[in-house]
Length: 335
Image 1 (cartoon, rainbow, N blue to C red):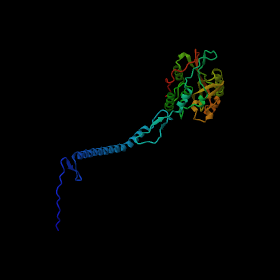
Image 2: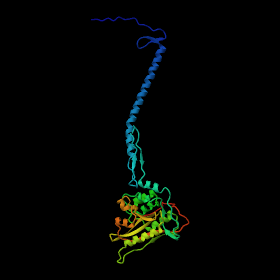
Image 3: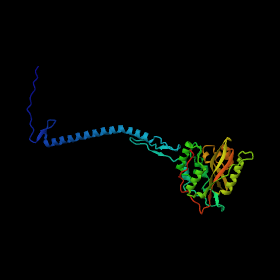
Image 4: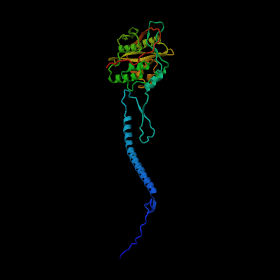
């Protein structure tokens, strides 16, 4: 079976026109405008597609960057202060946002800022005596009841603790001192080095400060006379310690009746009453054993039951009270 197609005559467009895709004769200028518009649209579509591809690739890499930065920022910082903490901000994270960190102030820093915003003053004269008990001012007894211990596990840092509690050791320096001496020290700090430190801290001449040692105080049978030591210390501070002033002193005792040790602590007078305070024990033992008013109470609960001697610092009379000029200078320990 044959099929015949009828051939239609070819239509020609007029001059200045041309057929479009639909076979219609359209002005050439209009066709060129449409062609240019299609090229522009095509280019715009290609650019948009390229931008989307780049954005998608970037978004895929951001979480990895966030993870890496979080791990880097939140890695614990090894410091000398075992109580230091790292606090991170906790708002919800958007894509690409990095969690920030901030180190909180330690209890010791808070304590120092609260009670030592003004320097303490070394007493210059008392009762007209040429030599007076070494003592500095304090503004409130809360300074001792609210004391912040330098260490969670104090061992032989009593000299540093006592100086810090009196406002005579910089907080950052004291924290480092405490950690190092507790880890590497063997006998704490020699009295000679403590004397040299106080001399430097107040820029005194060596002949303006001295250390007084009571010598051995024993009963007739040669055993350490603890009650007599306490009696003499009570009398000393009652007479020579001025109201609203604090001093550092040392007690020497026999441990288990076999070996002698010395221990630094403080005595302060408030409302004409002498109080004793052992800063090294603050926060470590039961508070009622630490916030003591009598030396006998501290001795009873510290286990130092055989006191044999004591010592304290004295300074020469001066024209006027003076503040410390350097509380970061060297104070070596026995290693």
